[in-house]
Amino acid sequence: MTDFTDDELKISPDFAAQFGQPGFRPACQLYLISPPSIDVRFADSLAAALDAGKVAAFQLRLKGIDDHAIAALAEPLQRICAERDVAFIINDSIGLAKRLGADGVHLGQGDGDPRDARAQLGPKVQIGVTCHDSRHLAMEAGEAGADYVAFGAFYPSTTKDARHFADPALLGWWTTVFELPCVAIGGITAENAAPLVAAGADFIAVSSAVWQHPDGPAAGVAAFAEVLGQSRTSA
Ligand SMILES: Cc1ncc(COP(=O)(O)OP(=O)(O)O)c(N)n1
Ligand SMILES: Cc1ncsc1CCOP(=O)(O)O
Ligand SMILES: [Mg+2]
Image 1 (tube, rainbow, N blue to C red):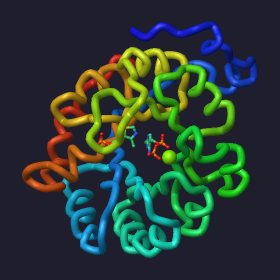
Image 2 (image 1 turned 180 degrees about the vertical axis):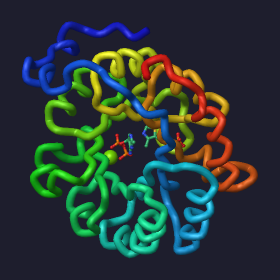
Image 3 (image 1 turned 60 degrees about the vertical axis):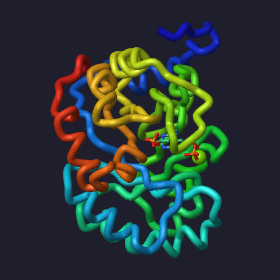
Image 4 (image 1 turned 180 degrees about the horizontal axis):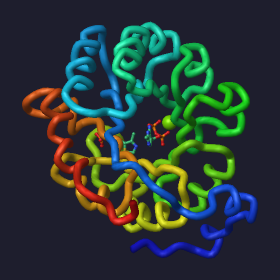
């Protein structure tokens, strides 16, 4: 298990009071991340993936293209998600999330302040924050009003050159202490997800295991059904 410094364990009384004791946690759910680049044909793949099993959220994560180009690709994908009651989350850009009326925005440590996101997007939009392997960053994110914190990478990823690696015990600690949902990300497959589900992840965020599945994205989503049906230690 990772050792944490005293600095990482600082927590304000306000934040502790806000989140209080842990309560009931729904079963772990799938949070689908888009491939890093897509074209117009991707809409069919997304629909097939979302129809193959329960998916809670879809994040449009397109790196290296500007917001106008992302907006043009987003419209049909947003509709496909809305028709299936899947939350449509924009990565990186508060402004784009606002422009598209997205259900949420995911912010990395350099992508903007959750307080600013809340001010711009309002109370109903979901705000997620990357917290790497840090308890301190996660508590800060919660204090800043995030709706979920994301920990990872848990495994080597072919999608992102991850520089921080998290231990499943972090999920167990977080879910024991806080009610705020946590997402596990990074190299997760149907074969290696069980320890993360058992440790208490509220969501597992997955990209390549679905989009690169040898039998296609629908099979990729379906493959997670069994592991997501497993019980968790911190319900
Ligand atoms: C659910 C989720 N967790 C973590 C990330 C990573 O965000 P970030 O650190 O900003 O890196 P990029 O995705 O922007 O490359 C994420 N996108 N989603
Ligand atoms: C966005 C992100 N942040 C940490 S790892 C990662 C990539 C997730 O994709 P994959 O499931 O293919 O590893
Ligand atoms: Mg980012």
